[in-house]
Image (cartoon, rainbow, N blue to C red):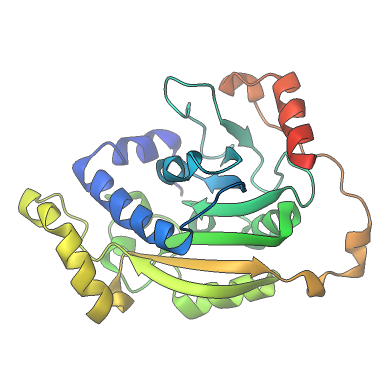
Length: 254
């Protein structure tokens, strides 16, 4: 069972959701301090973390799986989000420089095909950043937050999965050392808890964050065949016309 788009959106409007977003976003910015001129894709439900990259990235796009649902983003602005099949991204080969996976792998029905599809759309020098629930953390055990659903990971498990799908992990980090409770005094001192916890109790953090590069030397022979263009699912529900999708795909492919 995976949280749907309504559950995800509502969580990030709560005080606990806002605090956890800031803690995770800070770690993402430390790993990716500069995305100037990069083409960045968020997969799963990554939109709460994409805005900090928007001013510098050359292009920004969010892809949400059909089994989860889609929501307008950014609010009050032209849409940068589309609904897709979980293992079919509507993008050309080698068209994306950075991919951020959030609320994606732990809820996926087909984990390896998703990562292989991400591999396909990434450039040879592209970087992948994965955020998943930590198996040893409290957040993975409590269903009051989206991080309590799906399959949590330990660092060795996530590293092994990435290597098996032709990625080379380079950086392993963690975030959200506070317990998943909405007690105001605790949330107020969350940054202090985070600083101390990351030094002494990182193994029990709420989420794992792993960056990886693309293993271009491991390409199998059957990759020589051209892949067919990927489909967009229910683009009308997202108010994205087929013409807009074709234009976006052409720009990324160029």
